[in-house]
Length: 313
Image 1: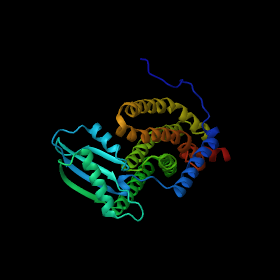
Image 2 (image 1 turned 60 degrees about the vertical axis):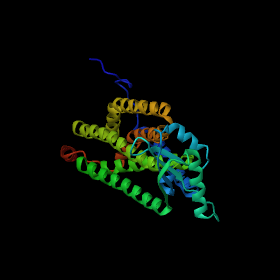
Image 3 (image 1 turned 90 degrees about the horizontal axis):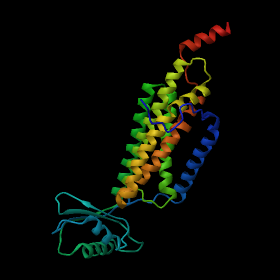
Image 4 (image 1 turned 180 degrees about the vertical axis):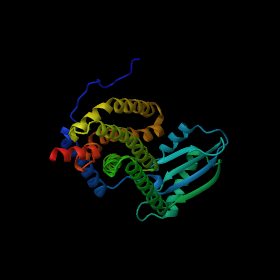
């Protein structure tokens, strides 16, 4: 039976040998992200900055793309519209933008008048609410808590399944992936909203799955090649799993690229961070998590200790 292989069977790339170059690339990404966040901050969207929510029941079934285009022409900032509840119900969210010295009530009324002018003043506006920045702060706190709890759960899982050294390397790689996603939102003018949090969690899940596959092969080879030098063993394990890593990444990215190109503006903005995250996750699994094991004194098993004692005698 023939198998699809995107990587030659006898490939022998010296991943460990180029670790200092890949470590440098990761360090540059981390430093650049820290600098841009400290100087520019993140461009928080409606979910974090607060805004105005309109729940509207339309007389006719809504054409979401057409309504989205109408709202975009208002230049109110970030706007989001989606179906909500019944077939004729829509939920509209508009970014809260209040200039310094401007009255809050006047700014709110301006947005309400603009939205009603675009949607229609005779529609049934069942709910109009303002979400203040305090709600956004709570969402930021809860989002960060969710990410940290996810990382902690993964740390415990890897430590139980493997050894603490593997867990430390896996979490370092996941932190690197998280910072890589933040780099996308800090360096480029993308809005940081709930989609960004989802992208971080999806990237973490994908990355840790890829990392565990490689770690599992390293552990297997540690038992099989008890006297092989650790750097050579890590290289062997990475090359043996490279075809699987590339094939999985390629199929995942193909699906995401299709969503990005043909999925429309909403799906595209959701897909792009995940595409970047998948690439960052694959990079960290191969070039970061595994080579870091060289510096954490990974155990080679009781038989190695016995063999070492025999050689000493």
